[in-house]
Amino acid sequence: MTTRLLPGRGPTAGARPRSLRARLLWTFLVPLALVLAAVGTAATAAVRGELLGQVDDRLAAAVDRSARADGGPGSGDPGDRGPGDGGAADGEGPDFLLVPGQGDGTLGARVVHGTVVEAAVIGTGGEGEALTGEQEAVLADVPADGVARTVDLGPLGDYRVVATATGDGGAIVTGLPLASVEAALVRLVAVEGVAGLLGLLAAGAVGSVVVGRTLRPLHRVATIAGRVAELPLSSGEVRLAERVPAAHTDPRTEVGRVGAALNRLLDSVESGLAARQASETRLRRFAADASHELRTPVTSIRGYTELVRRRGGLPEDADASLRRVEAEAVRMSGLVDDLLLLARLDAGRELAVDTVDLTGLVMDAVSDAHAAGPAHSWRVDLPAAAVLAPGDAARLHQVLANLLANVRTHTPPGTTATTRLRTEDGTAVLEVADDGPGIPADLLPGVFERFARGDASRSRASGSTGLGLAIVAAVVEGHGGTVGVDSRPGRTVVTVRLPGATVAEFEDDDAEEPAAAPA
Image (cartoon, rainbow, N blue to C red; front, side, top):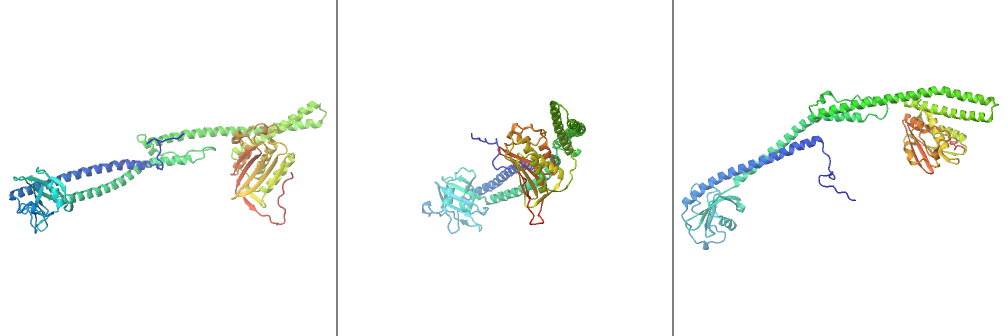
């Protein structure tokens, strides 16, 4: 199915969103430019009308002088004139044109039966200058109704002309040039354009300053909101000290209402975070106290059970029951220890920081796993040099032990588990891979959660507490590292990354490299 965007209903391809400041400036400057253009157009039209009126007044006076001086057609028959001969020969022109009072550029022509019989224009020296045939044809088409019109005479430019009828059926055409009017209009338009442009620039500069100062409180509100968004609100005790200043929370302004609403939101969020933190603190304290208090009775149960069993002489069913009680006590003891460790990690207990030999740690952990699970095949893949990383050796050993115990517990006998260690850009990468049945896809997102339960392929029948991977995640996070898992049938890989790793070459070149743990 093809989706079509109607005009105005969706984002334009390649369009860039404009800031509020830019939109406000455009909203101010575009109408201002339109108003200036309208005022300039109206002013130009008014000035043009006024100038044409003045030309028409002078033209009426020129027509009056020509009418008084008109003595009839000049000598010669129209048929005797050659093409382009406007009736002005040897610098002369019509008698009614070359009379006192007519200014330079004044045009005069006599039209008889639609034909110009004599025509000329007064030059700068006061003599008549002939017109071309095209110019005479234009003048011949002017109606003899005494109304002023504007015609284009080519090289002479635009002229304002009036044709008046004579008693012999002809007409006299008188005209004045519009060059001065057009020059004045060009200068006026240029002045209007420059003045309008300067006015827009000045208005834009002033508007930018005013809009910037007006939006400055909004920018401060956005800055405060950004700083709050960068706080680690997902965990830990967080105090939101950021607030919009009282000067920017005036409810009478739009920005003030936004600032006041943000302050109320931050107050509500801070209250919610405080309540959540208090609840989590109480829960952690309860888990830590309960785990600590349970250690003694659980240890006592284990001790007394073992003591009774060692004395012997018990019936077979009683001995089996005591063995079961002892096994559950051992499991409960592990659960209590795991809960106590998680409570301490959640409380932010500082981990011991020392240089840990991860290579030796891997060898020891894999050897322990082989002793505990001889039915599995245990392999190691180590670099040729020792990998060192800062951290708590006991906790990192527990990470490895839990990962290997997870393989031993949740995979069938005969499964091969490979522990790999390498470095990448100063980061130690520890992988524990197995070729077991894998983790179901729906369980992967919560595999590091506490008391996570798997299906039958990763059951808890062997006594798993469901806290092993949760402890792994908590310890790795406490070291500033990350842990992830990738699983599919036949291959499951848990990857631990620890920062700050270094490589220490072996001093003795003939020394044997770390060997694989016995299979």
